[in-house]
Length: 169
Image (cartoon, rainbow, N blue to C red; front, side):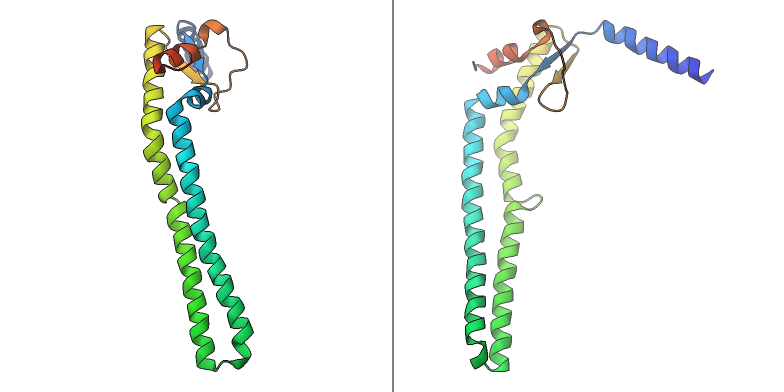
């Protein structure tokens, strides 16, 4: 009896899907054609490089302090050694903290990416929704986001219609 219900549900689902128009878009391709997306990507890359240089400089300073310590260690008193070790450890903590603050979960990079990309992604989503509603599609898959489309007739590809809504070629 249970199997009969599952088969009936499956047939009902299949028949309802047949009545629905399913389209697809290449959202990554659309994004790459949007000038504001390219500008945001470049800005994020510039910030990433700047922040990485700050972190690299801090770690280089840690290395320099450690080298000085090793060179001067035979001449140091136990108290001087302890202070120098604490100084090196403090600098290393500072470098790790900056790295976490810049690149960690919910760090500056995450926040910048979200701040710069959200309006672009919202605009893309609105254009997809508008094109889908205009052409009466019930479902739209994204071929670039894991929604693998092994074959799709050109009539069901909304990429150009969405690009037109976005004003890109």
